[in-house]
Length: 423
Image (cartoon, rainbow, N blue to C red; front, side, top):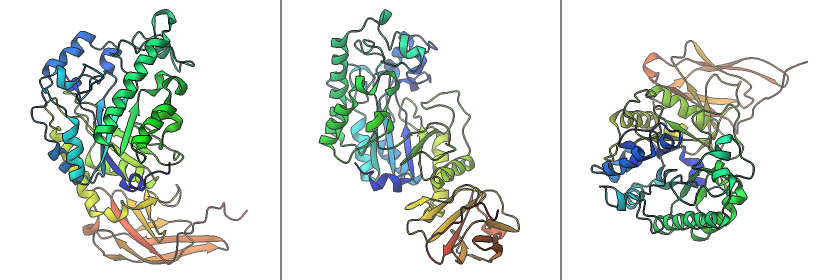
């Protein structure tokens, strides 16, 4: 399937890790897997999950104001706890928590009312399911996958019948999500614990696309995924094809009471512009509290990012990856017609901003969001090697507190010199 254009144009999505782990503020699923807390204590959080202040319309409004065009909510993490009333499982917030209701329908409806695309996260693995630890990965990537009691059967004694029951359960839940919500995007996880053949990824992809032919699948569907999902660190080399960086605002995916190591708005603007400048999307994570409220520290940062984006949206939406490294000291994007370069400048530019290797002549340079025109000139150049374009630094009043964007209008499509100069 060709990638849906809405995804590559969206630039920003919001990841939402919400589940019973927010009650005690422990790591989602991993806390009982790694033995940070006992399984009993982890599951006891079911009793405290209320969703009492959950307002999906407020979520959607916040996400839209942040500049996001889509969101992805954890319908079921590795702990197996479903945020909807799954007929395939008794382990749901509807049946087992004070919340006592489906939490997905309001989310999907609110996003669509606000014009946002709907994403749902679902883990292939379920460390609470009795049939999950029934076979062993055919080529285990690490010792945990080979021997962990929540993943592999004791002493490697496999039970293919139990594994088929597990696949039937997984397929039934994915079918429920697709039939009820018609998600625009399904964000899978947990794929590393089995091989593609063991997961029967082809059959699952066929099932999903038969019901929703335009559904986007992430790379954790392995060879059936539509885009790459680097995590928690901006890649140095651009991934092949469409991609998305998933990133936390602090150091945690879900709500952690003690985690106050939040990235600043300036850092988020930098990471966002670096991501879109390389042609990717940023999937920025929030961790709501157990009652469904998004912590003010995270909401404020989303609003700050949205404020910057609103002032510079011409350089964000509908653009493609900008200049390769070495042409400009900072990220950049390019208009879809290839005739306007948007140069992102961090800090306060002094004297001039330089652009190297540009063959196309420049018609004008303006400060985005202000319209003020800046002087520019070219010096040097020899034969096929173009000179350096020098752009006058904007006045202090025109400098953005997070990142200033210069719009370079070209007299034709972008043409870059990528050679090594004269021998």
